[in-house]
Amino acid sequence: MVDSIKIDITGIESNVIQTLKNSYTKDIRVTDNQLQLEIPKSFHNDMIVKALDKFLSSFKTKTIHELTPSWTFDEKNSVVKGPTRKFFLTQKETVFLKMLLKQEKVVTYEEMMITIWEEQEVSANAMRLFARNIRKKLPSKVLKNFQGIGYKLVL
Image: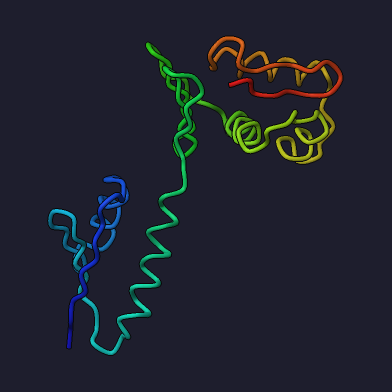
């Protein structure tokens, strides 16, 4: 036997709702600001509501960051969008930019080696080339080098 539960989805991003609809076409219907799920009666309503709330909250984590008023970084799609261009980032560039956004301090060369290059030995020249390449994909003067230490985003 099947019952249904309705959940208010006001404020949930449309792409999250679309993902749910595409993944669970038989069990989910969306009308206006309500998500209707068809579930077996044997499930306890409170348990389902808590699980769904946790699931939907996980989608609310910020994946698009504003770098400057006309520049954004979409970490989910590894894209930096400027006013007139879109730049696709490599996997290493995405990891680096996420590190820079997460930390409010300088990301050291050592931290870069550990996280980006997985502790492989990388020359200073290779790091400068890496920084130069990602700098081309960012707004000007946003990536600052601290000589002998590392890099920081200046937003």
